[in-house]
Image (cartoon, one colour):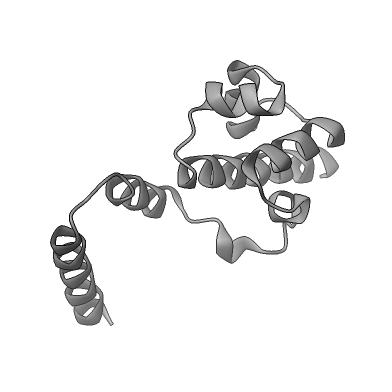
Amino acid sequence: MAERAVRHVRKFLGTRLRTLRKQRLLSQERLGERAGLSGKFIGEVERGEKSISIDSLYRVAVALEVPLRDLTDVRDRASVPNEEAEKIFALISGRRRTEDLRRAYDVLRAMFSRAG
């Protein structure tokens, strides 16, 4: 039971880390450089394959310019989007014209108002 909980926390932390990194348009390699870690290690943490020390986690938080609690509060599940929401965010987070973003918003709003 405890090992499963540890894996869950690792996966949650990795998802949160990936989301924050992508929001800041950083590659794993670039975040690793900023935090004094390897990009490979950042990827392993994001996938939940490796544990990260509190010292390294603090350096990652500083590199992301977020409070450490933004990475570690496993109770706050609402701030970690699911994989599909993450894909939508990644699609629109690049440089887009305002009218294209408005059109995308209108399409999504129409889809979700019909679903409700």
